[in-house]
Picture (cartoon, rainbow, N blue to C red):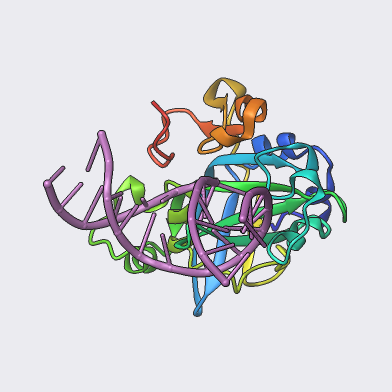
Length: 200
DNA sequence: TCGTCGATCTACT
DNA sequence: GTAGATCGACGAG
């Protein structure tokens, strides 16, 4: 059921980002399985993408994970508060990554509510990259971890979305990236309530 | 070494 | 609508 390691070895991050919509993402943290299917992603295309941390072949302790071979996680801290969960793709030395911005929760609802300190289920429990990571219990401990592991993995359960049901639009929060901010590297399922805000 | 700003979210006004 | 939280990377000095 898990997507094979080779799935992540393709060099076409944008295609994988689109394909990941409808795939199921699960984590097993503190002995509890939580997860759901992916409703929103963003592609970050390696060293030629101004919006990527790895732009210009920039290697730091934080970004080195992205330079490893595809099929692992890249988790980093943003604004000093939020953990962001990414999937590294392509071959070693090609720092391509996919940010998971939203999922529709299906497993471990109770645990996710607790982690988010919420009483009732609302769409914003897992809409937005910071929220997804928190609900799934993802932290920087889960960095550079294989997606073949039993801590975090992705499954194909046969759910697919037609092209008409998918929107491809510019990415969020990357105005600083100049022309690259205009690239349609953000994909989401149209009309799904579990999609982050700048959706309209 | 310091100051600025970021792939954000929440809680107020 | 907008301030605040607050870490890592970067560029200026």
